[in-house]
Image 1: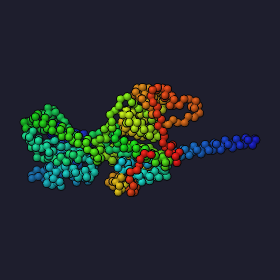
Image 2: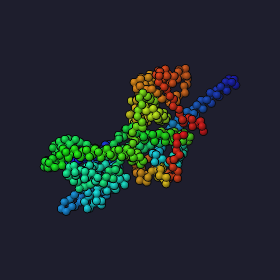
Image 3: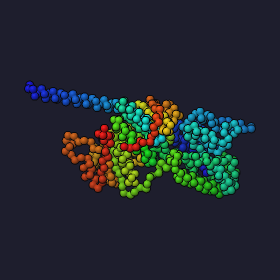
Amino acid sequence: MSHKDYLLIGFVLLSAALGFLLWREQRRRAEVSDRRILFPFDEFTLSMSALEATLRIARAEQATLVPDYLAVVPMRVSLNAALPRQADKALPLFDAIEARAAKAGVPVDSRIEPGRSYRHALKRAFEQEKLDRVVIAAEGPSGNGFRSDDIAWMLDHAGTELLVLKAAPDSAVGLVAA
Amino acid sequence: MAPGVGKTYRMLQEGRGELANGRDVVIAYLEPHDRPETTAQAEGLEMVPRLRAEYGSAVLPEMDLDAVLARRPELALVDELAHTNSDECRNAKRFEDVGELLAAGIDVISTVNVQHLESLSDQVADLTGVRVRETLPDEVLKTADEVVLIDLTPQDLIERLREGKVYPEQRISTALNSFFKVENLAALREVALRQLAEEVETKRLLTGGPGRERDRLTEQRQPQAVGEKLLALVTPDPRSQRLIRRAWRSSQRLGADLDLLWMAPPGQAQKIEGDERVSAMERLASVLGANLIIESGDDLVATVRRVARERGATYILIGPPTPRTGLRRLRPSLVERLLEAVPGVDVRIVSDRTKLNGQAK
């Protein structure tokens, strides 16, 4: 065999090895990204510091962030009804969250969860989603975050690990769609 | 509106509906009035045992407020909001008990007759000749998130009374000759309708505060324009969510209807049931008021052409096309094929911003 043949064989073997490594990495990522972190919020409970912390956790665990907008639906309205005003508030927040998640390299799978109350919407989310963790912010001085009684309720009902973040003195203000 | 129209029945119906939706519902207090239909409606709902309060030689049932608070349901059904409690109770009036439940984070559905409203008692007395002792401050009604009027024509209500659906047989004749006269019931009905109209108007005009805001949640932002109709080609993949959101915003700006079309690969349409991502897409479509169309097949362009014609689409929105590799490079792109298949329909590509952000880093 000539020198050229050795080079060709070497190139083919190297390409095959690289292809295998790429395939394995993709498969590993696909497997790891099955992990899902729920980040429930609405316009009043969205905390920027909690979001940033959740993104850091999701990136470290190579998990998918599931931002879930809790839409409270009045009793006279069906839970399956269209909620254009809620959607109007939720969608820019999703855009902004996705923009930040993209910068952090975190995949996002957003949800809007209608319910009769926060707790009802959360309960539906817990029932419908396969989750590995729930991250929420406790209510802070600026008012954004979940109240202590809601957190106590979640501890009883989440059915998965619940991570409660102490509210930082930030606010939801400033979160705008990039 | 008046006794016997079906307030308690409707309250129980709402409670059952909420229970079916997975909420923790209890009957905190029920006054069945020995009406079989009402009793039947209460079956299957947990009832918090009532307090037995002694009143002279009689024993009166009351709502056991502490028991309900200890039980901590998500939703409590409390009949007869204007009721005056016996001395053994902590609060003088039941609406005060309800105030405590609300303060504890428990939602409440309750019932009240229009003649019990404080501001209307004189008017009702003038109209019907009957003065009601138990009254309810109007402010209590104003703090309610929603007020539902149970309306019945006077003739229908009298018919229900005659059939024994309101009072036992021995009380029917007395009731018919006193309170349950057509003119009384018609007057009460008018008062109730006016009252509700005022409530609705006030809530519509008020701005600020989440409770008031919620009343306007389901209103459309603007009247629908004629002619425009959007069709977005989506998949249950999370990457499609931005496309759905952009499509919805465009539809709102245009005042147009939005259809979402998912072309499920052959064989996959049968596996939809229980698929988390499909169910999430259905929920999103439902919240946005979009019409989700699921088709199965492998000829995307032919399906889009058919659906676009059937639905009268004027815009088609698609996500960024996947890079064509191999022999696919020789075929026209999806955009080209769509433009050819549905002439006259605009095709818009919604970019994938995650890639843009990736490049920007």
